[in-house]
Image (cartoon, rainbow, N blue to C red; front, side, top):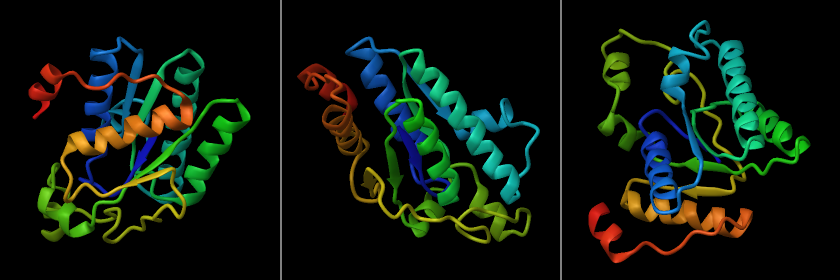
Length: 187
């Protein structure tokens, strides 16, 4: 499950919340591949030009496929700004017989700027950063994602429920309903 969207859209938040739910109540093997963490490790040698961004997505896609082959549910929270790179990752998974779902976390730029989780928009406005995805570097909005989530008006729990529903319907992942105790803890 690849969550794509602008910086501060909520990709990592949703992936972490879904992973906690799948691990906690169900004991499933879940791996979260977070773009920021991978940029410090697997792709530390890459910059932010188009070729390096495409290589980053290729590496993450290959890692996700390998983890999925070993039985993990893989949640990828990576911007992946270019449609062709995302299509390449989908083709890799399909060719290997691995289910692949693309989720567009479709949070408007204005909301992302207000959230500014990592201070990227502030740094860009101050002239300290250029090449910010969605501002002065392109973000190609997915035309036909498997699911589109707009996080500006719905709580995390509602978005996680939509992701669970997608896993249940498209991949036949059995997910029991949230118990009242668990629901009270998340609210």
